[in-house]
Amino acid sequence: MGLASYLSGILGEDRACAFLKKHKFKIIERNFHSKFGEIDIVATKDEITHFIEVKFTQKNYEVSDRLDKKKYQKLLKTIEFYRLKKGDLSDFQLDLICIKDEDVEFLENISI
Image (cartoon, rainbow, N blue to C red; front, side, top):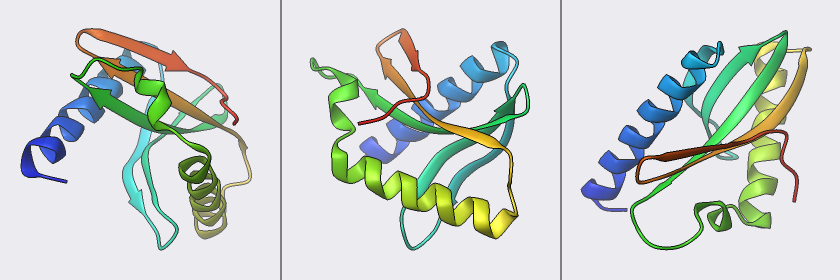
């Protein structure tokens, strides 16, 4: 990943956080890293912990297509590790925010 891609990803995550805050989510953590992978955003709303993957692009293809089965499995392992490490026993779900140009699409409780 080049510097431009890295910076676009940060800007995409900033936009995703702004979107979530506007919709009454509380941001708990950003860029949680483990040996299993990374969770872009951890947020809560209505006593549910949301683990949110952010996909951002300026190219002409479906952003949601960038979350494949392998990435999905890594996210589930990372979520399991996060919950164990933090002692998080709350209900949770995995969400996806896709950002393309000015559009923000929020896909809740995804599965593959």
